[in-house]
Image (cartoon, rainbow, N blue to C red; front, side, top):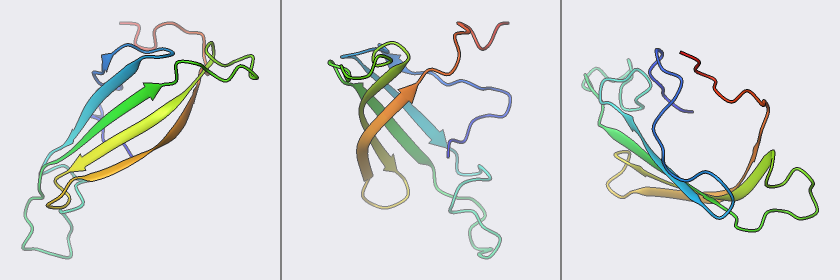
Length: 112
């Protein structure tokens, strides 16, 4: 689950979005955030949690699935990498494959 500021519905990413490209972002979870797993009512000795950080990287495949007519246009596939720090003395690293599908042709979701 992502813990976004309720007044915002976007977050900053760096890199280029598209086949053969990579984007990265970091999602911080403050010590006092309600979703911080270190803060819970059953342990009153924990008035605050520990800062947690999620570093996420999406690496898009250079060659998309040539058997799928949507591939590269309304669908992108690639590798997902994430490193979570602050939960344990060592970083927790996860990885896997992902598929992103375009669900709308609206060019700007935050039209302000």
